[in-house]
Length: 257
Image (cartoon, rainbow, N blue to C red; front, side, top):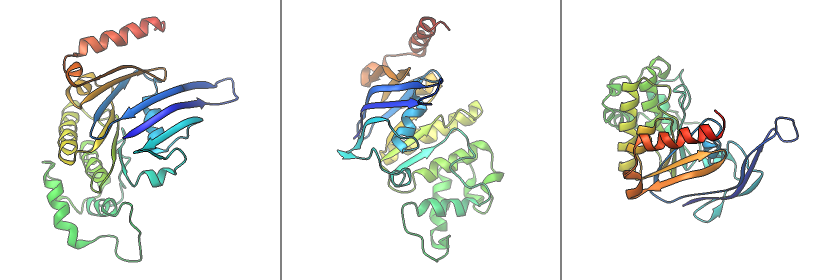
């Protein structure tokens, strides 16, 4: 279980642009949940992910995983048990290296590196089998540079790499936003398949309301650093995009937009 308790976060402290995003913010993610997070720009969605991953520090409060305080734990140590896929397909992979080399690096995540070879050829067939499950023909492109792949193919490889080793959390940061609609559908179907198969606790930030409703076990909407909607189970299943859009529009009117 992941718990953020009484979180405080200021941006640009001491300047005329100082802004308090989180003030006593609480959030809990239960083991096995697949949470979709929606909200307008500046609502705190990505900041929430960055706090979990350690990309930014809190000004106050605590972050705990299964009762263990990780508030001041370094990001690289957290990432041993966190897989993250970014909005930009160019992140999460090394474009100048081949698919085989990228997967070999991901396969060694969290382990100590010695002076041995970076690629374990004995694992090549295993990588090929993993890629074949994507149904994108990538199993025949092991020696192709990742930078030569399409955005959708790179995102598929990044998603696969992020879950190759045992992880506690999968963090999806608008991972379909930069893709065309058809490719985005493929990546979402792949995401759902991987999450279900590995039973990994997942939090996905998205602007696509249909994806937020169609996928996952819980729906959270954020606004100005607060959770204003939290639905799971039957309540989530009964919601539709028009209802969520209505909440969006009401907030916009109240904010003068």
